[in-house]
Image (tube, protein in one colour):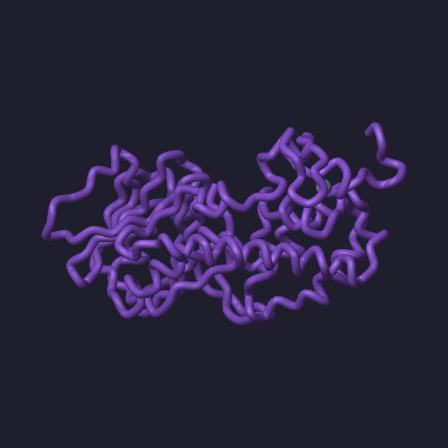
Length: 293
Ligand SMILES: [Zn+2]
């Protein structure tokens, strides 16, 4: 599943390809990615065709192309589980996307940008921009809080807001209305770094401790972004959900039964919110009162 660093890598790949380009035409090969368009796939194509792309922005795992000269202001993209953007020169042979190409954008520089999705959870939406506290944002993204890599992200204020919730720490980290872009993997890695159990009640955390978890999440995502960026080919705007960083540097996630890299005790896997959580049984002890639950 592409997480924030992978989505940011895609944004950085798309930006030089799209900024200043005009979308000459839109070919809808499969309707499924346009299921969120209220007026349907044809309306999506009509709204976007002819638009010029001014920039590509991101919040959490949502990407959007800012459009000029179109009836809509933005094209929002969510990669879901396996969405990719792939580019090719229309003068050359068309790549073999094995039947997974969904929507194709014909650009005014002779290239074609394809939205390819092996599974079908990704989606595209022609949307309007609305005013938000951190600037204009697509209406479909307005409910999403800033992510820790956003220059306007306020870690102190977010830590304060988090401590006022009546919830558990990992649940808070995954709550997109509090802080966006921290997925299951990054939450586990951040919790390992600060030696906290995911089920710690947030109201028991001091301000410094709450802030430390958010800082750890930002740090672990920056590290992943730096690693993902090194192997990135801008002509192959690709997300396969696993950068090389995952295999090398994960400390907790996916390491069930392996020794903790800090203390040597075993990493345990537990079910949490229908997914797996990983923690060190010694460094990240179960909070008092929750043992056995
Ligand atoms: Zn440990």
